[in-house]
Every structure is written in structure tokens, then in C-alpha cells.
Length: 182
Image (cartoon, rainbow, N blue to C red; front, side, top):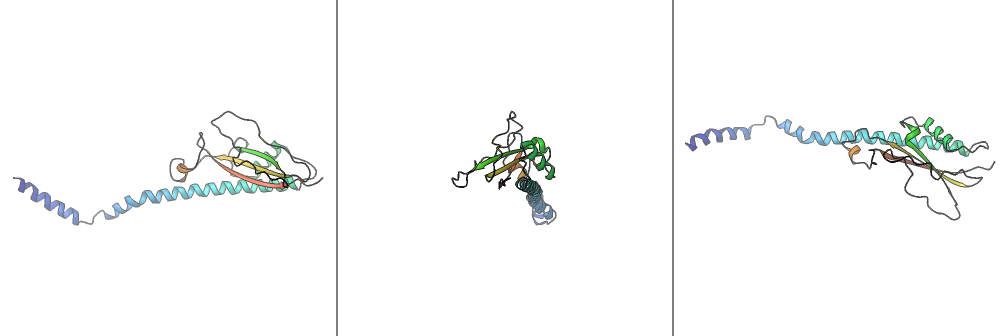
């Protein structure tokens, strides 16, 4: 009785193991998740690069205007407005951008702090930190930190990038200039 059942089963399994039907489906099922991961990561990396380059460009253009200014020393809100006007891809720039201006003595060098002062929507609002306009011939560092939400926050690079408690990552841009004499 058992031989009668195993004979047809053995024959069916033998035909099944020799059949090549569905082999493309198996290859697709194995490679598709990896290709999707790479594609989503590529889109995310492209957006990060675009946003960071626009932030860099806006900061550089603003610093150039400050450096070549005609006797006026713009304040925090004016500088922030200039950067936001020039950076096209910073969503909610007035709330997601934070600036620091730090004076450094080039003859007694002390590194600026490595941790940028960034906004965090998951904590209470804090006032502006370390924003002092320089005097004539003083070396100044202007650092801008903007927060962005990943395009694909649950997959690829968007899942693995360092984020704050609100799910945003920060892009930091720094520029140095010397305040020209008036």
C-alpha cells in the first residue's frame, strides 16, 4: 500500500525537480529586493546631495554679500532671510534652518565646536545660540544647519541615515570670512 502511494509521488517530485518552469521568477524574487533597495537609496542620496549643494550655494552667496557689504552688518534674521531666499529646496526654511556665527582668533586658534546647533521639532524651541557679528578684520565662521525629512524614511538610505527624534536628518554647511574694514 505504501509503495502504491510513493510511486506516483516519487514520479511527480522527479518531474518537478527537472522542470525549468518558473526559474526566472526565482531569480527575480532573489534580486528584486536588492535592486529596489539600491534604487531607493540612489533617489535618497540624490535628494540629500541636491539639498546640501543648494544650502552650500546659498550660504556662500550670502557670505560673499556680507563680506563685500557696504558698511552694514546684517543681523541674524536678515542673514537667515538671505539664505532662505537663495536656497530653493529647503522646505519651511524659516523653521528648519538654524545659524551660528562664531568669532575665531587666527593667532590663538581654537577649533569651533564639532556639534552644529540644529533645530529639533521633538524638543522645546530654544533661542539663537552663538551669533555675534564681527568687527573689522575679525575671522568669522558662519554655520548653517537645515533639517530635512527623508523621501523614503522606511527603506534604503532613508532608514539607515542618522535622524533625530522627529525623524529628520541634518545637513550642515560652514563658511568662513573676514569682516572687511569700513
